[in-house]
Length: 260
Image (cartoon, rainbow, N blue to C red; front, side, top):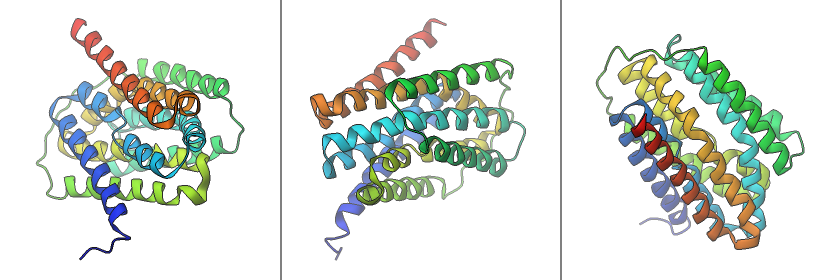
């Protein structure tokens, strides 16, 4: 029999893991652009925020979402580092270095006081630098394919489940700012990068993360929407609106891609 005290944690882990596994499996099968688009949807952040909304009030969710808006600067740096390093380095080096960059930059950003205007200005500067760097680094075609490893999917499920359980369980002790940072740790993008790099090579991983850079503004707008609406409209309405914004951005990119 399962201890009733553990049941909520197991439900949280299963719900978040299932969403991310389904999204990442789809991403691997539809190419770099669509893979990056799917992986940038709030497939791990969304479940984390839903579970946080069950335990906390509107103000907590609003504050956590502002922290996530700020920390998206780290996400942009993480994605650009993967785009540039994946074709040139082995997967442990490129992914490990990019995660270390995310952690270091997120820690530095947390030290500063932030307003919505300041957070948006920081993100705008990060996007400008990102697109400048990526323009000078043309994409390379994928050149190899490897077979899947039996533990790819279970490993992703365990990692994402542990992240969501850890963030939501510790949220009452670490406060909204740290919770907002932990909620957008790039566990889904990291696991997808590891799998694509192993199965298709570094160039394919780079192309997937390049697409994720283009899709990332939709994620930023979604957490910004949650921050702006959580207190005046309520946290559940804000989360629904944030999801709609993310899906709308992705739909717009699909239309743009089809016309291009």
